[in-house]
Length: 381
Image (cartoon, rainbow, N blue to C red):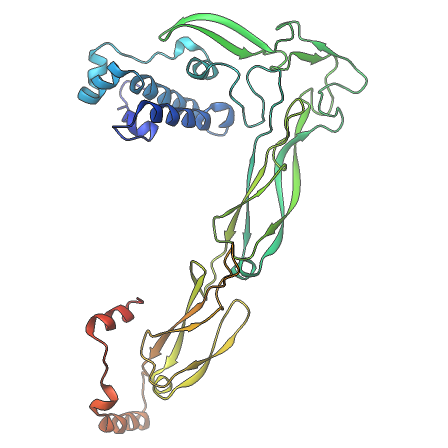
């Protein structure tokens, strides 16, 4: 962060209230640290700075004295008191992470952890699929293509060219870790990092696999059939177990999370499990009563418009909405009647309407509905 840039409020950085207890602050920082770690945000060039910003906020708010000074005097009070963040002494962001949480606990998006040894579960994968409203109403199956890290079939995941040995890493002695001790703003800290030769595995192939270049895994394009249940709503996710990134050293693969996007249908608005539509009915037919065709997700149906139907009156077709996702209930179709007043009348039509108007009495025009009821109906309530 440059000297001219005003630092953000530490509480805003961590997303906690000013009276948050220490446990909540620590939990918030752990969550942010894992989200912002540059190893899983290689696409975001600002991830490292965001990570350091979160670490700085945690360093202050987790210390009672510094937090009290910050609460009373803000950033200026900390500077006056001699506090200044200094993460450069840590070296890499991984070292900062370890200073707070210790080694061996962080997994990258490819499932590789700092400090090898045990199995490592593969990371989850996110994807999206788009369907229309009728498919959401009846359920459907979509074919989805996505990129995933899978085991290399050529070397069966061990990173070595078939028929060649895998040897103990000389640099780390087979531990998969390199440890150094340094003095930092937090005191003396032992830093543990994955071995840069074996990448934390502890062993290296004498002859790396020609297909995956010794990684044991490769990025490939996979396809999967996704069963979309009837009644699913826009933005909901479907979990498909075991279809994420491959694990390491026998670890199970991650999961695939498919977010469903339901395309807007110009005929309907969705309100929970109900659908809402609107139809135009000429005023004379609304007065006399008529039959009209209305759309549903299963095709058009006939709807009876009772004589005397008023503007914005809502008629209900039971069970013509969306099925509930977790029950056997089905929503309704609410049909809002838009009574159309004729315009551009010719002479004969005007005469007919004039004759009709002369015959109108209070009995024809009276309504028991109050002004608030009329307003509520007019505005779709």
